[in-house]
Image 1 (cartoon, rainbow, N blue to C red):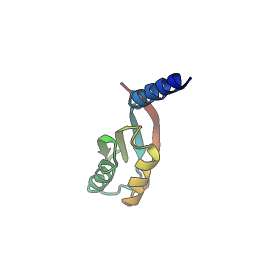
Image 2 (image 1 turned 45 degrees about the vertical axis):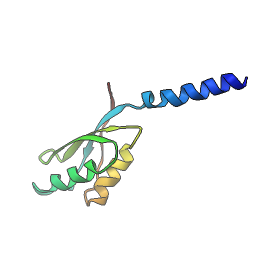
Image 3 (image 1 turned 135 degrees about the vertical axis):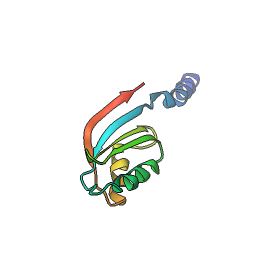
Image 4 (image 1 turned 45 degrees about the horizontal axis):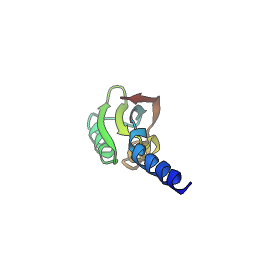
Amino acid sequence: MKKSLIATVLFLFVSLPALAAQQTVILSVPGMTCSACPITVKAALNRVEGVSSVDVRYEERDATVTFDDAKTSVEALTQATTNAGYPSTLKQPQTKQE
């Protein structure tokens, strides 16, 4: 019994990183009012641990963010933009990346 419990715990411990996945979301950032605003939004999102890429489009007032869902969340991303002065919301549902 004890050996099977240890084996199960070890298996779960080793497989946890495999459960994490890259996520890509699009955030609506309507408060960007000038062509310099995307620089601030991009910098704020890039400071969030787990973010691997950010593409901010001023004309569409949105940001496409790819991140590791084991390290951060959509809530942390929207909080980062809000803290930078640009509140955002989820524009497109999360999609799994391989």
